[in-house]
Image (tube, rainbow, N blue to C red; front, top):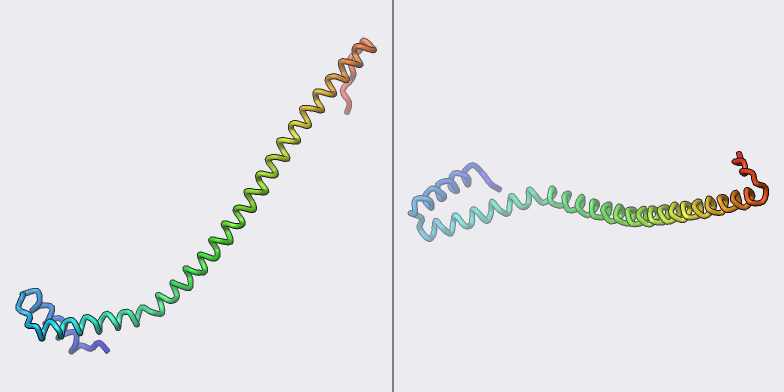
Length: 117
């Protein structure tokens, strides 16, 4: 466990390292302290990292669900657009047929066919 004494030793060794006056034994001691500090930090961060990993997996699942939903909605939209296009074409066809019937009625009777309610 990191203590005040280890912190002082670490600070002293880092200062000697910065001055360029670190012996090989001191360099080894500094490496050991850095490794210990890294291990303690990793252990302290492990729960948060695990929580983030779980959250990331959850978000990835949600993203896949949204992507599937978006694909299905896009298919529905394409069908709706096709249906609307077909309805417009059919309406155009009906208007053409009605116009032809009105013209035929006028040709037979000489009168305009009144608009139906």
